[in-house]
Amino acid sequence: MQSVWTIECAPIGSESIGNGPVYAPQQTIDNTHVQAIGFRKAVGFPGAPASAPVADTPLSLSETRTDIRHRAPLFGEHTDEVLGELGCAPPM
Image (tube, rainbow, N blue to C red; front, side, top):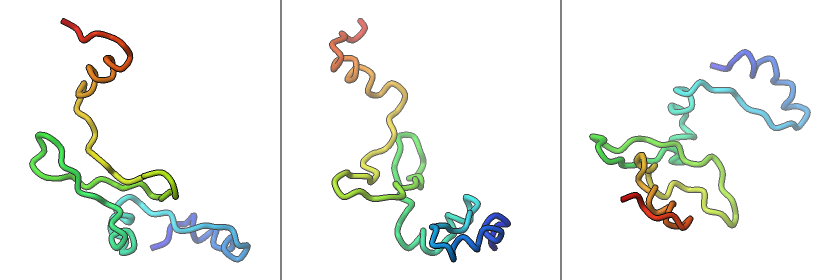
């Protein structure tokens, strides 16, 4: 099902201006192309009962990695490391 916005703006395509449908989040997840390119990656997280689906970066660059390399940190997980790099001693 196309959105009203897509239907109203469809003539833009004849003018060679890039455009596409506007999807609701669930429509994006269900899209066969999104599924085929492996856009969602399973990422483990401490304390979670199973891996969680995380959206990958929607673009690729020629000289920069854009893929998911690791999970999000826990609260305060890297605080001592970051403060150490800044020359601050960890609290006692």
